[in-house]
Image 1 (cartoon, rainbow, N blue to C red):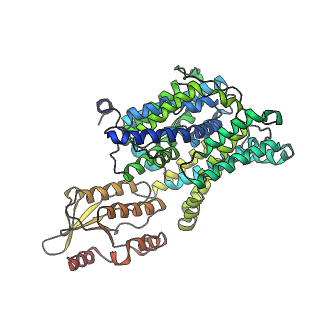
Image 2: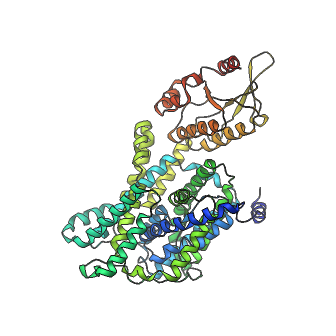
Image 3: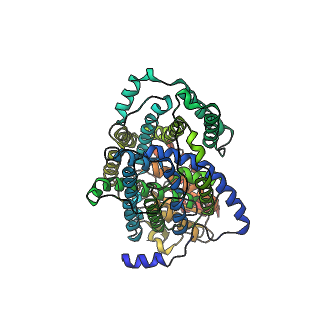
Length: 561
């Protein structure tokens, strides 16, 4: 389909696909969820703003017009758009050498990055390039986000201890911190420990408890009553309120190349992270999803960000999970949160002047720790040593050299990994011929081997780039089959299964189980069987449902009929 035809197609799609249809009885629940989400999201984006080196109020702007833009033009009912730690770290890592953080020039560069990323996202949506998200593997993202998390957490230690900090790389930051420990401000340290304690305690009480918000409100009140600044505790000072001014960022044309590579890095993270998140929630709630339309929605959200004086926005996994935990199921939750943000910007920014900067450092420190995927890295080390090495290289690059370079390494490693696999295999169905033997037919025929049994042969190794197609084909075949009882995956051509695909098989098993369909395997080679056993899939499916051949599956099924 030509780009012009794609543009016409998108322009004729109905708006608010993430909101409609909406049942009236659902509205009060969505509004309540939106209020809860705003209470959680505001302190979080303030932390991301600190990571990005932007003025505090610009972080709140990221959950204003950009969130509205995606709610109107995107297709996902669940994806929450706003500031994100990974893209914030990319911006800071690249702009620190170009402009002074929080300065008007710095803000202009950050807004231009958002606009350039928006152009890339819009082009990707119009050219139907959503599939590119498949080429940055889950393994690479684990390593990348772990590295970002470690880098972010280390960068906040100076602020938590009240030690003057310099804009240095992570290794130099550690050396500087260790050399200046004698400068620790004890009152600042006590504030930091109090904030961390409140947030951790609130999480243990309830995952829905707005611990960061409680810590911020408590710190503001304590600062105002006790005059914490007199104890050497730094505070934010005046935070401007009101709505953002719409304008085009004033960046000289000659400086565009300086920030374009940062826009590409942000685009890659947005593409991989947002699509993966929207896919996961669409499958979870059995919702329709148009990935390319989501890219258009994300592109327009970043246009709104760039024109309203803030920085890149992303489809955030953490915010999306916040919405789910709060009880939200459509973009009406996000629109309600936008209304709450409007109230905050119009009437409630003055108290932020009393907020100790150590509070935000502590909030950001915990955000960084949440990004460190110890469980994922441990699983990779135990189950896929080679993939663990790839993830580790990515993490170390991010920590020692920089986030932007980490993205470059991640891309190269993903391409290398992809070259080891076949992305678009020839997948077929196995059916009985007239003589009782087995023949193959195209998937489009949807033909069952015998009534109630469908045998699906996947034509390649199962790995991160083709697991999405595998899932879509299995779910589609099962949904369209009549009176299906067994779904057999013939693994004749599957000689390897990676970490991501292992999780995919578990997801497919769950999806079929919900439909009352039993997942069966056949023709599994021993190396793959070893991986299935190690990953717990063999036990999940049951050895009684794993057969030597497709013919054995047919005979076993007939014996039960």
